[in-house]
Length: 179
Image (cartoon, rainbow, N blue to C red; front, side):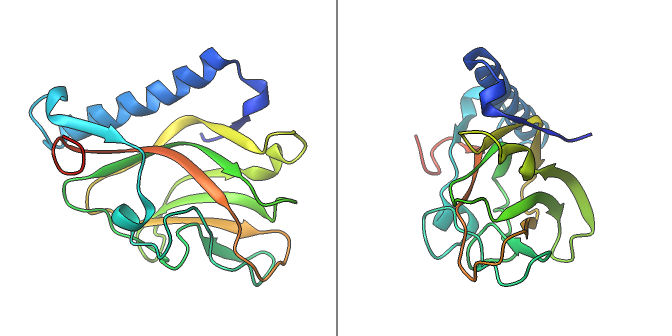
């Protein structure tokens, strides 16, 4: 079961807990997959859009929202980026900077054809809050070499890109990017 909790309904302690649970889930998964032999051999950092997902810009931008009810990638010009064979990513929150919020659902799916749905979050739950940000009740993890199919459903036709920022951690062996 996946649902989103608006940030304004969480305490700072709740936010830290959800973020730490995501981090621990990512580290546990990386160790299980053998990305390192111990926690000390891993590093967790915020993902870099260009380096990790192959986007054209190092910022969170969807594809242009050209049709209501249609799904659009959150990875700018890359429909379905593939993770490197020694990296995994775990997402724990989302924020929508574009106002009014032009998107209604956030889909985490696997594969270019979106064969497996990992989670779906209703972003309209966030619209009636001052801060259009929410935390997932449980983290969404993608393994190395997974094809990420993360999209939003357009609810307002803008013909423009929207700023939909995912909060997460990229977990990889120490020394790849950060020593």
